[in-house]
Length: 250
Ligand SMILES: NC(=O)c1ccc[n+]([C@@H]2O[C@H](COP(=O)([O-])OP(=O)(O)OC[C@H]3O[C@@H](n4cnc5c(N)ncnc54)[C@H](OP(=O)(O)O)[C@@H]3O)[C@@H](O)[C@H]2O)c1
Image 1 (spheres, rainbow, N blue to C red):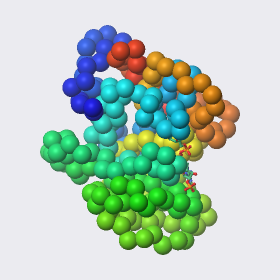
Image 2 (cartoon, rainbow, N blue to C red):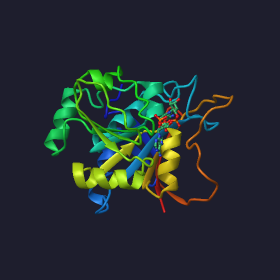
Image 3 (tube, protein in one colour):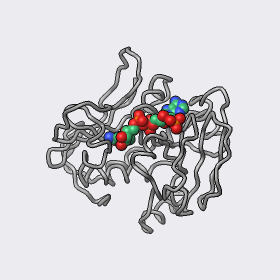
Image 4 (spheres, rainbow, N blue to C red):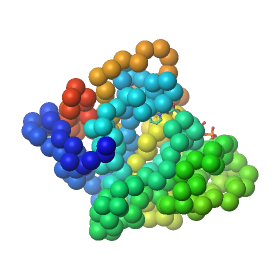
């Protein structure tokens, strides 16, 4: 699970064999970061019918190759941002567990694991999640709520936006105050929609799994108002019928 040696078949731009590690090594979001906020890239797995969940979670959508892609993208991140809905549904713990990968990040001048950034308007946070009890890494929470958090093993910093979380201001704070140049948003659809609506998404990594979920459920975005946004397809890879696309926002 999650090995960067996972082979893929690159279909575009030049057809050929590539590993997940080689593919993500060619993606350097930190180098392309604007001066005032991080470069923001997002990663989602969808079914062919565009569902982001099966039975309320994402785990049954993608394969081991999709997990490898997620880990590869985390390896390029100074910070990983999630919405509270994703934390409540998925649980979350350490972002990079493999000691070899943690060491690799340190050799590249990064922290052993990315900073976790949580967005929760109401501070409706499951404090018993491993993210808070494992004591590895660091967490920054952007919230509109005034509540005090409980004591946690993992250091938590709360940044309050009393009038409602301002994602643009949050990203500026992360860049200026925490040195975050490359930020991976792992969801969910509500946070993804808010980031795109605010013009704050630079790259989208979308896995399309060869299965159909059926029924209702969220897709790539929730709450995104109508309006065409143009994307460029940067690459397309395949593994066992699963498609891995990278788009950049024009
Ligand atoms: N397929 C995939 O790749 C993938 C990826 C991620 C998640 N998911 C799935 O998506 C589902 C969750 O969907 P979701 O849309 O609820 O997830 P979400 O965006 O992670 O969570 C929504 C919650 O996050 C907070 N939030 C999001 N945007 C905010 C903003 N702009 N300002 C302030 N707070 C904000 C709010 O938290 P509060 O309610 O605490 O105020 C909001 O209720 C889960 O079933 C999960 O499994 C799938």
